[in-house]
Length: 87
Image (cartoon, rainbow, N blue to C red; front, side, top):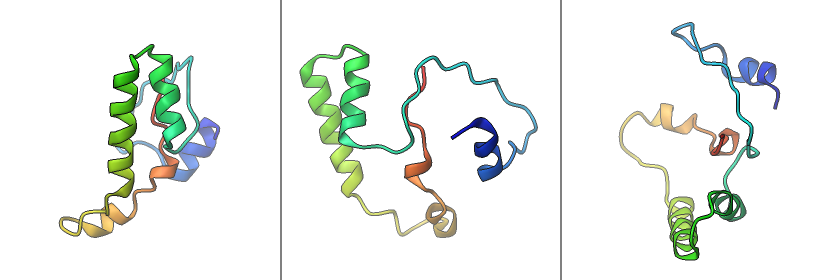
């Protein structure tokens, strides 16, 4: 997604300022076990750390959304439209 498309999708930052994006590495939107493994490999992490991150991902992926708090706000979150790693 181009920066212009992203701005159209979510709107401008309400405070009116932002830092320019200068990422040299950018993963696609959404999170999967493969993305977790790719990020871990990129960071040259040991296997035990990779497996810990994969386990944490599966825990996150299987959790239901909370049923307390501002439910209308929580329901608006689309985790597949989040870029989880930039460098």
